[in-house]
Length: 185
Image 1 (cartoon, rainbow, N blue to C red):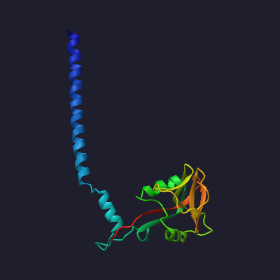
Image 2 (image 1 turned 30 degrees about the horizontal axis):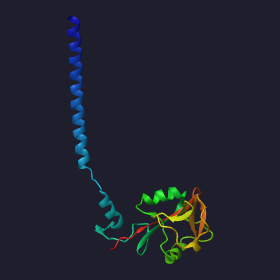
Image 3 (image 1 turned 120 degrees about the vertical axis):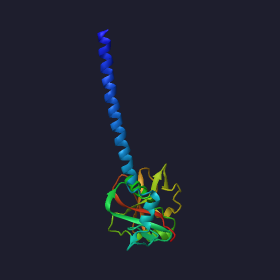
Image 4 (image 1 turned 180 degrees about the horizontal axis):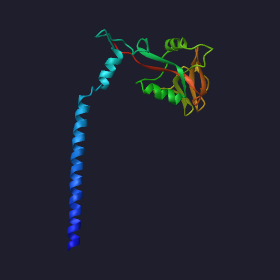
């Protein structure tokens, strides 16, 4: 009988400690919740506004492209010339900026991106690679301008060099070009 009273006392002491710890945790949780609610939250929509319409002298001036992007109606292009990445890494970087590697829609855009590179530069990744033996753009469409690049070989991706597209291993490292639609302002 004396043993049973001892266990009851130990259990009661542990219950009291747990209750105290639970109360302390609830207090800390409520305090942290209040701090979080007081913090400034920047929603994705607000971030977009800040990126395209930065405040200058307490006024907003909106632009069709974010800072660092080149406006080429109706698109924005970003030239990533400082770092070198594989084709997949470059596409991942573009996706992180709500864009893709450049898809060349026509001859005019091909001429436009040719100004970003020269024969002395190793070229820039564009959104074209071989899938199942076919040159395919990152948007899923097939390459229709066959004069732009040589025959398709799996594991190859396209690099823009001057006025040409060259076929190189997707695992090689190059600079890259991202593209997204410009805002109408």
